[in-house]
Figure 1 (cartoon, rainbow, N blue to C red):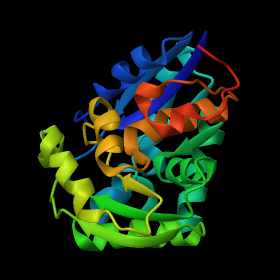
Figure 2: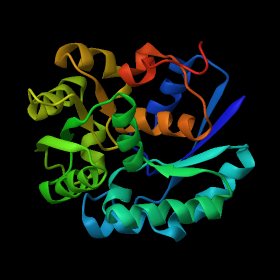
Figure 3: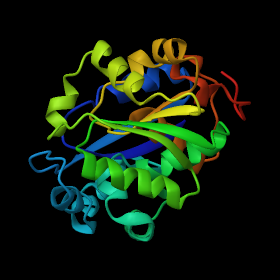
Length: 243
């Protein structure tokens, strides 16, 4: 059994995680600990606060007791708002506190884009424009070319948590660009796992979404790969472990 640990801010799209666990159809357990998300506002000051060392440390002990082998901070914006160096320091601190390999969703997007060899991407973000621009800047710092950016302008995580498949699809289509080799949908409050296959079919290109890449990143940390086509192109790369 491989146990993966996640620190998830608040209660929004956490049901994506048991859905992913089912689609993996393997000896993999997905454990979530909910951290304080405050009011869930997509504001830089709030996003910095929810990813503070104190907030993340509060959930670490529960994950250790669950037997987790790696931990991922399941927030994109709660990481990239710190900038490239700040996000690295956040993850280093989390790894030291947890005593296990650690990462965050912002880095998961970078690693996932490299995995599928997507050098040019489009960003379809639920956030206001200023927060979205920080994500694009983060990606460029990782030498990922951003060819298109669309901001939906949602003020809170709670707003996007109730979006339907149609609304998620519209978000992705707004950002799509002929030069984009993949579409990135940040925001772990977005329900996307049930829509991945349809989105990739509609857009005719890989789609990377926050909760999807977060679990993939945890598997990467423990040197596991699982072929799970229901989770999109990212999970159909040559697997280390076939199920």
